[in-house]
Image (cartoon, rainbow, N blue to C red; front, side, top):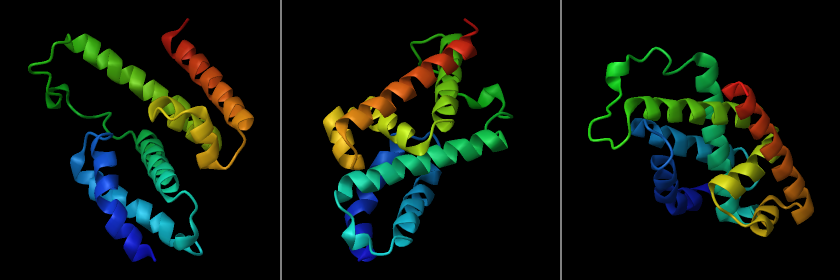
Length: 165
């Protein structure tokens, strides 16, 4: 039943989102979005590999949010004064350049097909082994490797284009 999933996964999902977004006030909405998506399943109790499924769903919620924010231009009009660089060991220009690279990477990932993006996120960002990624996504290891290769090629090309090489 969905109620047991909510009781079991609310806190872990909150931690997951807290580590990945800057605007902490959005965490409850993101957790709710995961459960909303689960509620649309015919029977959420029939989910195989529940942990993996729920966290892949959470990753997709983040990707969809990033895509929406990119389309809306969220954060593009924030004044530079809102960025707190106090106490940073890095020069402000280096911090801003890193943010631009992260935005370029997020944009490149948003252009990928969902399955390819999920393989990339699970393998590269979540650090899962390729066999575990394949098992989680119910595909062969070879298929997961092909998705990973496509994602890496796409991201490398987009970052090359972004850098102007």
